Length: 250
View 1 (cartoon, rainbow, N blue to C red):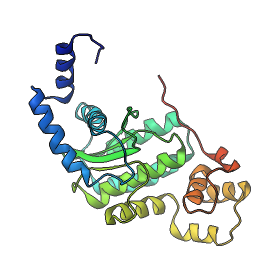
View 2 (view 1 turned 180 degrees about the vertical axis):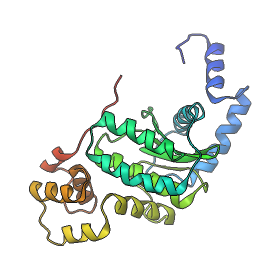
View 3 (view 1 turned 60 degrees about the horizontal axis):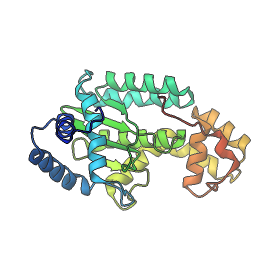
View 4 (view 1 turned 60 degrees about the vertical axis):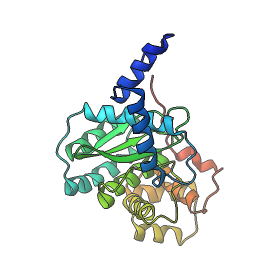
C-alpha cells in the first residue's frame, strides 16, 4: 500500500488488501475471525487483533497467489526429515529449500515479518485445501525458528483443519493440542531416547553440546535452546553464541 493523505484512497486500499467491498464487510470479517481465533491463541499473546488480522491476511494473499502441489500428509511427514537436516545450513539455503520442500508436499511455508502489535512467532491454518505455516522470525534465533516450525507442522499433521493456531512460542501448557504439538516438535528435533541419554550425565559444556548436536545431526543452537527451556542452562549463558541469528533483508 502506498502512503496517501487522502482518507478515501487509503480506505479503498485497505478494503482491497482484505478483499472486501465495504467497511461493514470488513468489520464483519474482523468480528468473526477474532471470535474464531480467541480460543487458539497462547495466554501470553498480547497482540492487537487488527494487527494480527493484517499479518494473517498478508500471508493469505501470498498463499492464494502461489501454486503448490496437492496436500499429501504422508509426503509432508516424510519431508520433515529432510527439513530437519537443514538446521545446520545457512539462512538463505534454509528459507529457499524449506519453502520448496513444503510446497512439493502441498504445504505453504510463508515467512512474513512481524508487524507492530502482532507479537507472535507463527500461525497455522488452511487456505483452500492446503495448510499454511506462517512464520515471523520474531525471536530471530535458530532454536526458536526450528521449534516453531516443527510445532506448526505438528498441528498440520495431528489436528488437520480443526482451527487456526497462533502463538508466541509460549504455548498453553494446559491445552491438549498444544501439548501434542510441543511433543511432536521436541521429538522431531531430538528423539526422546537420545535426549534422555544426553541429559542424564548432567554435563553441559560447549564441547559436549557440540558433540551431541553433531551426533544427532542437528544445529547446536537447538540443543542450547532446549536445555534452557528445561531449566538445565540459564538463558543468560555464554553458549548463546552457538545459536544462529536470522535477520530480515531489506
